[in-house]
Structure formats: structure tokens, C-alpha cells
Length: 101
Image (cartoon, rainbow, N blue to C red; front, side, top):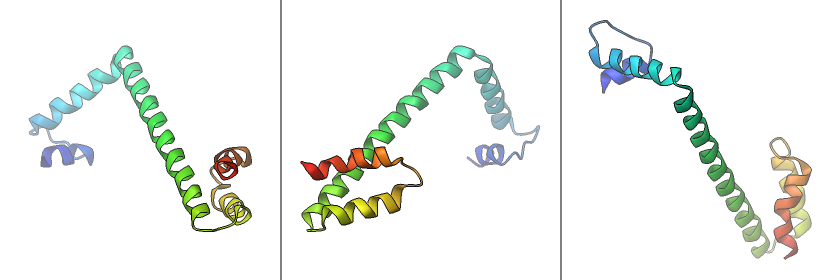
């Protein structure tokens, strides 16, 4: 395991066979366009799942705040304050649509 951490830190040694093999495998992997494409597709799918999970949690939080008796106006105002740096107003309003149900 230490050899792996050494590789991650860039502490390569010619005596470290495991790290050298791993580095060679990484170089070979990066030279194969099909494998790189597969990895990128996997990362995109993983990001989609993470995004969907985040949206679901955000909507659940909005519903929970409503259930706690917080007014729709206060929830809307706070959501725009908290998320305006990462979400557009339209996206925030889309998530807030659960308040109208």
C-alpha cells in the first residue's frame, strides 16, 4: 500500500516494481482512445447520478421546510440566497415548484 501512496505523491523509485508497473499501466491506458472514451462516459454517467441525487435531496429539503411551517416566500428567498452562486434563478425556481404541489 505504501508503494501506491508513494506513486500518488510522485515519489517514484526504480526499486519500486509495483509503482513502476502501475505507472506503466496508467500510461498504456491513457494511450488507448477507446478506453479513455469509456472512462469519460462512465464519469459522465456517474455525474448524472450524483446530480439526480442532489436534486432529489434538495427537493426533499424544500418539502421538509414547508412541512415545518416555513412560508413558501421564506423558503424561496433563502433558496435564492443560498444557491444563486451555483444554480440559475430558473433552476432554483424549478426545484421550488414542489412548493406549489
